Amino acid sequence: MYYNGNNYYQNNNTNRAKDVRKINCNEKNTSQENKEFDNLSTSNEVSKERCSNNTTYTTSWGKAIDGDANSLTVGTNGPVLLQDLHLLDKLSRFDRERIPERVVHANGTGAFGVFKCYRSMEKYTMASFLNTQGKETPVLARFSTVIGSKGSADTARDPRGFAVKFYTEDGNYDLVGNNIPVFFIRDAIKFPDLIHSLKPTPDTNIQSDERFWDFISFTPEATHMLIWLYSDNGTIKSYRHTNGFSVNTYSWINREGKVCYVKYHWKTMQGLKTIDRVEAEFLAGANPNVAKEDLLNAINRGEYPRYELNVQLMERDMADKLSYNPLDATKVWDEKDFPLIPIGMMTLNKNPYDFYLQIEQAAFSPAHIVNGIGVSEDKLLQGRLFSYNDTHMHRLGTNFMQLQSNRPYMKVNNHQADGQAEYYKTTNEINYSPNALNNNQPYVCLENSEPVINVEGTIKRATIDKTDDFTQAGEKYRSFNQNERKNFIENISLSLIKAKPQAQKRVIEFLKNADNSMGTAVENAIKNMDRY
Image (cartoon, rainbow, N blue to C red; front, side, top):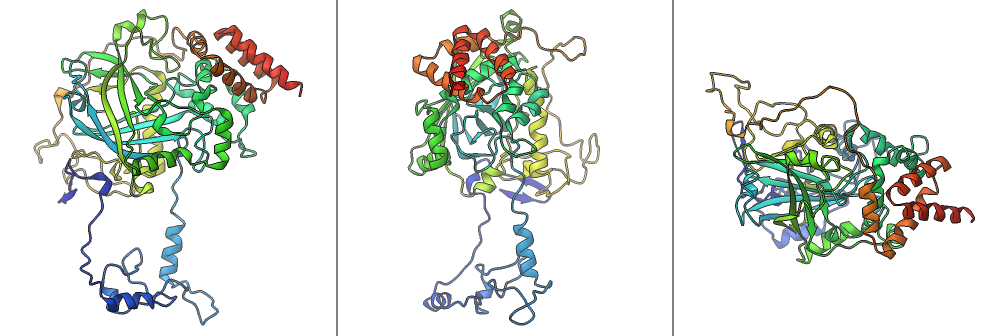
């Protein structure tokens, strides 16, 4: 990257994983210098000759430091002086090393790689990175658990975040999903309540199954998600062996302005693997970082994980003809009616060189779209469009998009300016539109206008049409083999037994509505546990 006046540019071919300033030290590695290094005292004193080179220990403002083993004191035994500027600099900077962790998806890892397009999808979308067969686009992928804090076990029963940032020539496109294709709720207004029920209680700071089931027992739409989560799909030990799904429905727009709905599926090329409850609980104690280590070590060995991107496409007018609402995040689209279309391959081939800089500060958002890709009326997605960027601004600051992993490869050109921790300018002195002083620049791109969609209705708070909370849940359970059903019954019963009897009754009724034999099996399992 390079700077030119107030404008910031970045070459598309820049290796983002090595985006660091190169310093020309011009040092001589003499035997005398090595001897001097070996004889350093505990106060890290160095000669005047060494104080002039770029290996000298300095304060954050660049002043050379004369010692780092002892504070500046009155005499040998103190007290310590407030004028010890190195001590103040070191402690105050240390006190601020941690930023707020993500509210959800805090525990995770990531890697860089490339996405290669299989075929042109120009018929359906004008997104340039999907319009040329063989075209390669740099990517950053992040995998995570959802509920656990940083340092929690990778094998906890939880959905896994599966987020990919495409650094396209038209800006960044973030595909932010999970490893399970559905979610607990269909409306974003219930998201804070869901997460509060799953997080530690305010009084004890301990997670409580009772609270979760209390919330779920009034949320029948969660039934489908429960079947996925309490099967062995809810426990994994390798991000290389998991699939990914957009969960939400998006839209594609072609150059003629035609709009279609789209769902995304990532298919692991390493084979799908899960673990059972017993192994998950063992690894949570024996190696809580097992999934993070697995990805890191595989890439270091040159065993680069690959994931095929597939899409399902639907004409907009089909939505009203289906027995379910295809914009409902608690539903999947039948692959018989909407077959998977493979469109490209993602290969992760580079680990971060600095985890905090490149992964912890990485910010993904479903609102980060490019020309040719749009959103849908999906109620859960509509809330996510706001919430993700809002939480990034809280966690990382106003200018989080200027951080290394979040910057687009192309030039950013607008009138947004200033704010906390601004790293470069995206505008010049004429920072408004319309204007004549700068020929009304930057220019708008009329060919990328939003498609015209007619929407009408009464403004009100209401549940969607065609909720059908149980049909797909029952179908998913019946797709399990005998061992998978056995594990599911055990997993959910061991958790549900911790709920209040009335909450148990409500949840079991949901399960019976989905599949009577499933609900009855859970009911009997809990009764048998009560005997002991």
